[in-house]
Each structure stands twice: as structure tokens, then as C-alpha cells.
Image 1: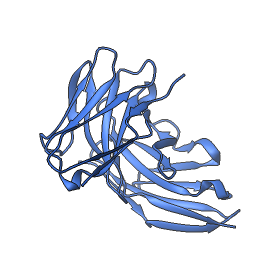
Image 2: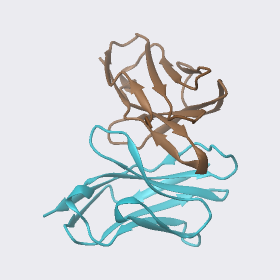
Image 3: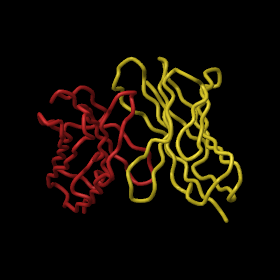
Length: 115
Length: 111
């Protein structure tokens, strides 16, 4: 079975500050890992994905994440927060055993950005 | 290029009733997954359809059923609605590179 733990249900940063959202996963097989963003009353938008290529993955809107197998982590970072980054962020894992694996999501982290 | 579309946007039903939600995948995508997102929670996988067959299923009761049509669109049916079925229901279509593209969701309220 796979699982995802997102440390911190709420993260608050100032505009221009570093954003760090933490994600740890558990998987008995090599994982694919994803970060999604959800704005209020909207669906999920893919920020970035790790599918066993480069361990440092760059996504949209200046976000990036690093896959660390030894730490079973896939933390999301952005050097400088913008007001428009305020949203809920979800980390998700699927297995590499099938081409269309189901996604297992974490509980989400709400990011607040202060002026 | 149209993305994933879902209908209706919002729905209010009474306990015990039945509901059907609809999803049209992104052009060229033949696989559809359904997720339930309760308030304040991450999405939970319900099931996945490919070639008009249910390929995978999550831990949801048989009250939840689905269908996929030859044009790859899909329906989610929920029978005997419970208050706990109130949630945002998300449809995702799956393309190359293991990416799942999500629709805007259907907000179901059961009273």
C-alpha cells in the first residue's frame, strides 16, 4: 500500500520569502510523485511530477521539488512567494507498476502568503 | 483544446436518492479516474475506467458504480445517498507521461 504524509496542514509565509511544503511518502515499489495545486472551488492543477528521471524536478510558476529516496521525501519549494501562490497544495504518489496507476493523495497543505 | 469537463457543477440531493455525474476527458485521452474529495481532505480514488471496463477500484462500497462510453466519456452513479457522500467529485483523464488532468469537479450536497 502507498501513503503520503504532508507535514503541516497550514503554512504561512511573507511575500518574497521561501516557500517549503513538506511531503513524505511510503511505497513498496518505485513511486511516481506529483504535486498539485487547488484554488478555491476549483479542480486540481498539476505543478510538477517525478517519474524516475532527474531527481530535481522543475514545474510551473517557479516551483520545484527534489526526490530523495533515502529520506522518502519529495518536498516542494519556491524561492520567492507571490500573493497568487496562496492555495492548497497536495502531494500524491502512484506506483510504477502500471502505466495508469491510481493516485494516493496527502491531506493537503494550505499556503497563506502575507503582504 | 478543451480540457476535462464535468457536469453538473453543483447538485443537491436528499438522502436515499440516486445521482449521476458526468465527465468528458481531454481530447485523445482514453482513461478516466474518479475521486471523492470531502471537505478539508485530499482526494480519494473511487475507480478507473479504460476501454469501457472498470480497471481499478478503491475502497468504496458498491453503491458507487460507473460507466465509460465508446467516446471515452464517463459517468459516476451513486445510489442510496448518505449524508457522508457530500463532497467534491473529481474526474481525471490520463495522458502520456502518467499525468492526470483534473476537471473542475461536481459539488454534491446531500441533505
